[in-house]
Image (cartoon, rainbow, N blue to C red):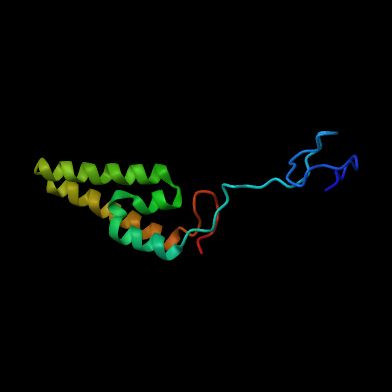
Length: 114
């Protein structure tokens, strides 16, 4: 392979030219992966939505932690015998999970689900 800037021979795996320092444009991105599955996202939301696992799968860690805390607080309110507060929290969480299922089409990196 030859440098497009200076024309000197460089290694095929070179990221920059060792002679002039210009990038070769052959940068590989090992972090890019196949898009995540929408079906898997929906199934995880259906079975483990209260724990926010579906949002962890999609890379939305902030949402996931918030959903985990809502579930934790609902469980604490049940233990404290204030079921009405727990029921309201669980209804809010259920609405949020259903909204996630119908509206989230991309992961946290902006890659559309397959």
